[in-house]
Length: 314
Image (cartoon, rainbow, N blue to C red; front, side, top):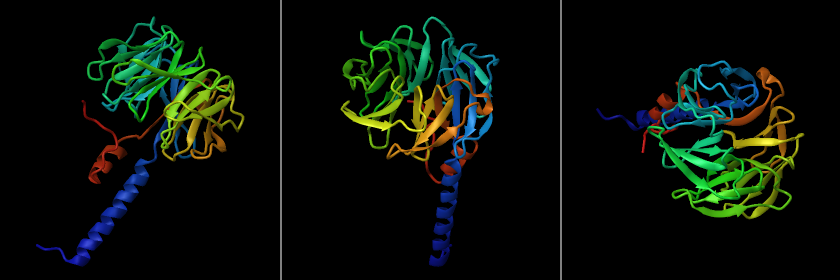
């Protein structure tokens, strides 16, 4: 049966409204915060910064050590790295799944999944980056290392496919070929970059680096040219991890104030103390991660023909 033009137009309008409402709903991500000395992972509302719950407790049956890095895997599970190894959890309930990597001698820091689906994790005790097979989690060995890479705290892949790793002790960000792990170049900014910690690429393809000892967030272009201080207001003290949120703004862990500060993602202007000190028992924030909770995300986005979280393996 043919649908008349009026009915067809109404259907399109209704579908557009539905998808707009779905998109608005699914944009309501959760903000996860890994607490180093608290040894837990706390969850906050990404719209208000209000505390929701303790997603992973210090006494869970997975990792007994400090919580350092957070990553959402292609399998939809939450990967938590720390001094005691790497554990896997259900991201909505915090239920423990298993310990994937346990050797405490490695000293894992922040971990991420690369474009190839494999898991890359900083090794701050041995100052290198190790790679694990994204399907089996088999240890594939050292992926990248350099004599100037000391205390590999955070890492991220750039829009160019290269791997960028913060070298805390040598005040540099090390750039490695994203496919071979070969050293490419070092990024520094004289005394301005003092204790690089968190790394994040913005929608402008620039690299944003938190400088722990100078209490600033610095901006570089993708090739490492220093573009100046991007953010330093609001009492930022000892910045650690940083992430661009669903709203396009920049969220930075402020160690001394034990809070998460928010800055305008375009201008760097201070907006507010998004997660306040002590909220939900937060004592020592280290890494942060935005995730979209289920079941809202996948089912509704699929209805609109949009893929929000990639579930497939390579």
